[in-house]
Structures are given as C-alpha cells and as structure tokens.
Length: 299
Image (cartoon, rainbow, N blue to C red; front, side, top):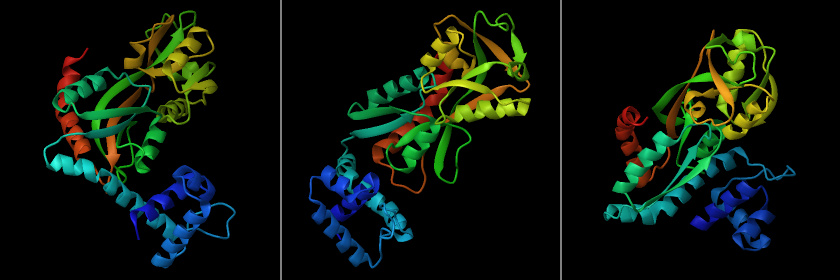
C-alpha cells in the first residue's frame, strides 16, 4: 500500500464520485478504479457498498477513512516537522472564526504571536460554530472558536470570553426608551437571527421558548452588519453579543434582557486523539498564556 492509495481513496469520499475524483487528481477513471480495487484486495474488505447508486462507505470504509486521513496528514506535515526539529519555526495554521464575535482581542493575540514566530502564516475562515466544529472533525481547519458548551468527548478546549446578549432595536421601536425588558415582552415582535449554522441561533430560540413563546423569525443572515441594517430598516429586532453591539453604526439602540438573561461563552477548541502540528501546539500554548493578560488590557 502506498500513500497515493490513501490520497485517492480520500478524494473519492470527498467528491462522492470516482469520475470527479479522477478529474481533480488529473488521472484517468480506469486508473483510480484499479487503485481502489487493489487497495480493497490488499485490505481484504470492501470499502464502498457496491449495491448503492452512490459511493457509500461500508463500516470498514469508514474506519479506514479515519486512519487514512491521519496518515496523509502526518505525511503532509513531515517536512514542516523536520524543519521544526532543526529549529526552523515555520508553518501554517487554519483557524475557524465565527463572524459574530468582536475579533479585536483575538487579532491582538495573533499580532503578538507573529512577532515571535514571523514565519508562521495564518488562514482565518469565517463560519458558524456548527460548521467550524465539523471542519475541525474533518481536518479542514486546525483549531476554531465556538460557543460553549461543546462536545468534550471530541474536542479539547480552553475558555476565551463570556458576554451578555442584548436586544437590538430601531430607535423608532416602542421599547427604545427602556433600560431593560423581559424576554416575554418580545413575543409579538419579528426576529432577525443568524443562520442555522450558528449555535447562537439555537441559544436565542431556546431562551424564547423558556420565556413562553416561539420567536417569529422573518430573516436570517450570517453577517452581523446585514442584521444591523435590517434592524435599522425596521424589519425586525435581534439579540446580539455586547462586543458586536459596541461596533454598530446604524440608527439602532440596545436594551438589556432579563427573565431570562442570556449569556454566551466562547472557547478555542481543537480535535482530541488527532495529530497536532508543532506550530499549532506552540500557538495554543501562546494563546493560553496571553489571553488573560490581553483581556485585561484591551478596551
């Protein structure tokens, strides 16, 4: 068995088709079909269910996929790891970020890290917490920021920050002059929420149900500035983290929520029982050491 067998197998799974995998790998379909047959013969198992119309993994295929991903990851990281052993601290880190957090604290920490490790580059990928967790499981990103609680069987984590969520409404809204409201008072309002990929969406919906109503959602978005503009246009109300509210520029106001109040906590997470590169380990260690200091010194 060669590393290319695993790479080709992973690509078949990713694309769901031997034809598409062959095109992406710039090889012929007969070639990739033969490599798959040779791989199954060597392993003594079928990796795909041939009775299905689509490329569906068997139980053996699912088990092999996890091992193959890990082996390919180790193989691809070998040059970087060898450089690190020789004292050449360089590499690349992919980080999943939710677009509903104020990134000032995080970017300051990245800047501090870059001063110590100038040859390490970053790729920041914005997504909802649910998609970020999926991306970490699928090895598409190295680490991510998500809303707590998360699956502690799957992820390591350390606390990043906690924030209050507040009601955001247009200045023309009947509650604009209030300092605080009970959540049940919003039962007749239209809500603008984040898309279903965001755990914050679930948190707000559950809080409304606890208060005694199901929110009437008229719009969803993955971008807080779009939500801000829709609120300003009086399309509805929303509930946002305090740090995001501090950055709003449109003609909107915020009101504290009570009974129940809504908090959210963010954490940095990475996958358990998986290979972690040297540079990612250094970054995680640095973040754990620096975040407490930075939280106390950034306004």
